[in-house]
Image (cartoon, rainbow, N blue to C red):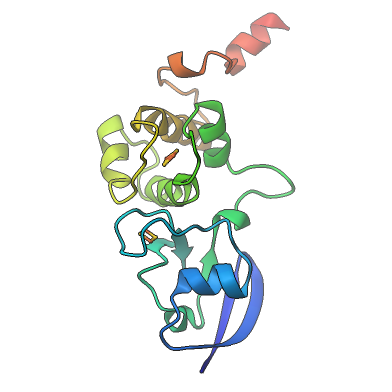
Length: 178
Ligand code: FES
Ligand code: FES
């Protein structure tokens, strides 16, 4: 066993782990962070994506011992004060999910993408999340969600097609209705 010290979602943990323990298994089985899911275990699907010192990584490709001294953020560490992170909210509002299995990893990858490129085009979103697979949505609403969140995070009105989310009342429409 090897001793590790790691911060996960803002809390400090000190644990003994097998050197072969994957980070995703440490998160789920030792810490109970089951919001991070395993889709393939072979580094293909991206469902297990978390942030390691701010960078998106597939946690099934990282040993827990490699996270020693690092800060990990999972889908459970997003948002604050009971509010969703803008990317989480956008996935909900823009129907960026169906079964939801890919969603934690998709959101973590998207946040990393937006940190590097705050105003991505559709193609840049598709390229940025190419390591994350979704079997349900066809990706169209995921792209819309990421661009919607990007606009909100930049403090501008989203210029994306909201046809798939007619229930979303835009801020300007809301003001007009008041
Ligand atoms: Fe890690 Fe699929 S479970 S990439
Ligand atoms: Fe089902 Fe993406 S919503 S796999």
